[in-house]
Image (cartoon, rainbow, N blue to C red):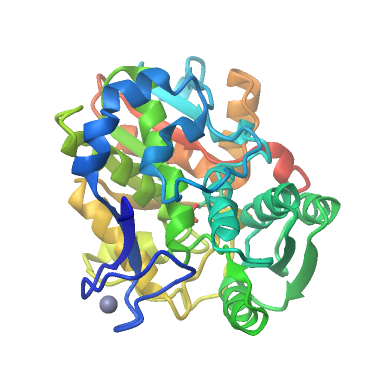
Length: 389
Ligand SMILES: *Cc1c(COP(=O)(O)O)cnc(C)c1O
Ligand SMILES: [Zn+2]
């Protein structure tokens, strides 16, 4: 018997370990459920954390990968946790840390889910992979597909920065520009995955295997800090990174390794903020973003058209954790990108800067106490969109 299985979050139907993206009974979104008792009997968390040695794949017992599969890896994970010291607006918060996902092999956190996804593609014997991407998923998919020796096609919306397009091409992926937003690209990727019998790596909640890679951020944070932070501030598109980090902490709590959970904060840009909007209005369900997408933070510009339930899934995690969702105007992103670079030596992609700007909002509004330990996830490197000013 496998140690894990895809389960429908709506109706509980269990699915076989194969390429599956939604519940075959009700269409609901899937989550991977583990046999934690058996896993923790052999691999208690203390042991996993002390033996990780900064290799994400040492957490393999908690990834949805069969024992015989060979990991497709480029050395992702094990990223630095830096204390923020010099940004004056944030000086009231001595325990603010930056988790530098920007130093992964393709300069964004997407390397974690894509490493797991390409390993899953190989374990399922797929010959080909496709994805829709606002940029970073496509770059990571192209790199890990190159490593795995699989053909890769990426469907990209018109707004994708040239740095990302250039990298995808260099890794040997085929690019298909799509007129419209990320949501249009996703629709095409879903059709093409079926037509070509390709594994769909799109990093919404679509691929239940990929998301699990995000949990490893939580394990690392605990190893690096030695305790559970009070708040984790995450730039979100549909929100799988935020949900994955929370799931990682839930696993550690369930195993008795920690006794509390962090509050999760989801941050969007004002110009495309369906989840923040639903949070503000007190709604339970997220609605698709109907206005034009108007932000330079292309990495999180996901209007959720035709899959707003993904946003609702993220919103429910935020609420369950006691966190909040908010959005940031673009002019403040440019300001804090510069502050991060000049005062901390950290060059961040515009989408990532939303997390730092959000910390300032929360400090000003009295949401944060000065003694709180706060993590801002720097999801991507500034080299990914330096042409955007
Ligand atoms: C993908 C991405 C995000 C959003 O992550 P989701 O898991 O899709 O919500 C944030 N920042 C950057 C730089 C990204 O590439
Ligand atoms: Zn179902």
